[in-house]
Length: 104
View 1 (spheres, rainbow, N blue to C red):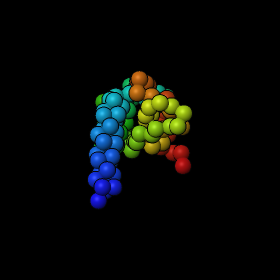
View 2 (tube, rainbow, N blue to C red):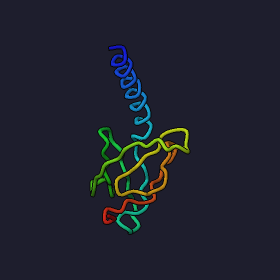
View 3 (cartoon, rainbow, N blue to C red):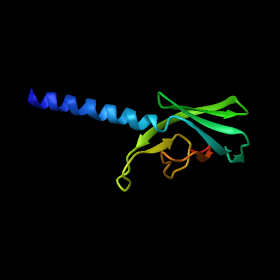
View 4 (cartoon, rainbow, N blue to C red):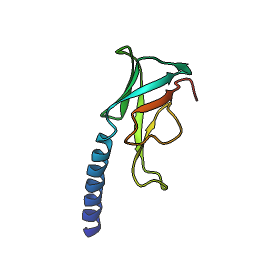
């Protein structure tokens, strides 16, 4: 019984910490390329619920999923975007290099 209580408390603490960390990444990013082409006036809007929207000239042109990762070699969380760059996206970043919905 004691182990169940400890495990439950641990899950609650980790869940709260994760929510705080997620909030730091929920914002708009400038998107430079979409599907291999330069994308002027493009925004990637990371939203609650682990989804993002791609906006071009204020109009939604795409969407995807995101998650947080905690790499072993970095003391914090980084953003991982579906169809996005394979390198780390840090909390302080304001630009996303690309989203390529054609990659497998």
